[in-house]
Length: 109
Ligand SMILES: [Zn+2]
Image 1 (cartoon, rainbow, N blue to C red):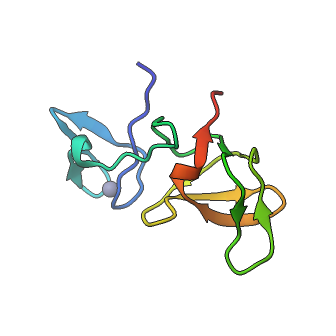
Image 2 (cartoon, helix red, strand yellow):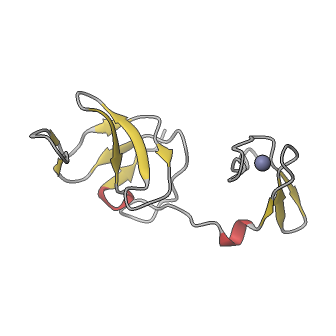
């Protein structure tokens, strides 16, 4: 079992441990149930996690600029965030931006 537990949604502590059906954060005392955590999935249903590498599956216009993130662009080290664009990442040649998980596909590492 090498799967790492998710960081605390309150304080981002990575010392999360499991107690019965709960995840518990030893640093701030936050407890939460993993079942209710929204899992972010890519275009084909793979569960995404922080640090994953993904590829973009269609050309995406970058809001507020003339740049386009080309289909096939590989993006390393994604970070999952709340919101409409649920992936925060640094796109090569573009910079820091938000992507929608439905427009990416996880790359097996
Ligand atoms: Zn915490």
